[in-house]
Image (cartoon, rainbow, N blue to C red):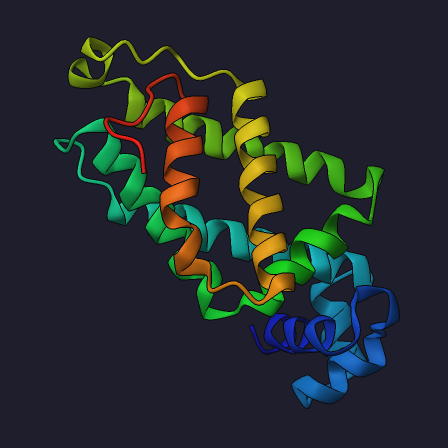
Length: 188
């Protein structure tokens, strides 16, 4: 965990392209040997940090959702949980979004694995009798990828523009509801 925390601090400070194993072990106050016991290289460490971040977000969303709540309330709770986690370290969130994508093909398999994890989460939330009655359709992986892309872009934009993440909740909820096939009840 110290290595992952150090990696996070390093990418926030300099960007992933400039981070070295020496930087990470210096910040973690550990040795190269310890680093290589856990990771094959610096990209492997970034992938582990990304995986941990996604797992934390998915866990927060799961805990925030009340399956008996309305569709809009569930989406709002999910968006607020997601933003709450991202708001704890917005610079890291932005760096992970930008730097992980920069790995190109090396990151695709993991990125798609987590897109599938989000799809499964969204599918489990929308496969209730109550939500089926609203006309919510099964959520495809492609729709989840589009939703994640839109939310990640909104997040990165807000961080870089200095917009408080909480200010984007209503827009994110409206977009998520529309992309999930259930328009918001009222316009904002």
